[in-house]
Image 1 (tube, rainbow, N blue to C red):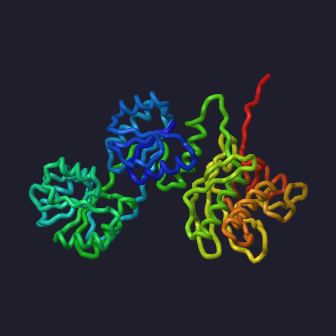
Image 2 (cartoon, one colour):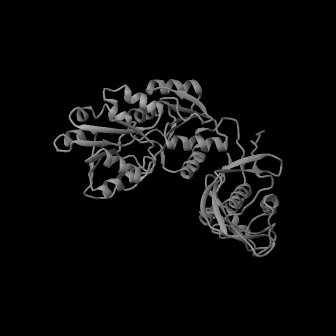
Length: 439
């Protein structure tokens, strides 16, 4: 079982991915937030002892730390508990754009350092964009200066603000996704002479604050994000997270005595093709697609877009090979789907897909190494979608595997006459493993 520490945009992304691939998990937050998440909810503060107890009671074998970057106490407790129990950890970190070097921006190691420096300056009107949790941290400042706090426009944030000693007239609930224009208007309305922020990253909309400071030519003082413990793995986007999760799943979530089935490269290509078709028609990629397998089963894939134009669409999915020792496990498999002037479905070799160079295989010499069943699966899905959208069946399917050429060197492909990449194979869509019996 997996335990996610969330309550952030990043935590929600992890939960959404797990919901797509039907991975069970617990989702821990300090308060009752992200109610739409399907995993089992856990509320309240947890120190290292409580984390250990929870993990032991619930069979936790992997922890995903997707909590706020400034939740230092929580990060340390997660790390300490995981180390003591020997549990693997993945840190889903938010992206942090490089902070522009400018006369407006000044960095500080802590709120205390920033407050001390501010009290030595003559700024009287301050707008803090640091969040409701920092009201008490900045108490020495707002006791001596006029300091407004922009907070989340939620009942919980308003309640937390009212629990402080700050006069509520200095609290401004506001949508944090408000753009440069809205934040600039607020800054001018309050006659703010300086903006305060923490290094909040992309999901904290830090660049908006930078632009407002530059536009209004006022200082932006920033508390640096704290250093993280030495987690086993650190990722900062959904695709990288899913790739890392599949790798860790093979070891940390392995059940003794059981072999987990996976999915073939042909199933992956079919999923990517379906997503590309939908994107071409609806001008937007779906977050996930469901694929019908030859045996009547279904599976779902998270979709990671690459490109979209009026004539073609491309995306990748991540392969889960289960416990099969497959070199493509956790790797990207993609499709570029284009409208064609020729009727039917044409298969084209993309980067990392092998080409058949010797006779005797299921595919003729000179063709991309995409076996008959995957071709049939892809053709079937395109035919059904074309009928559904009442359009002609005329497409070019270019399969690609970004790391395929290098990965193929670890396979038998070069020996059997498949050159330059991986084969797209599969007969049932599922890789089923069987444990050998020893006599």
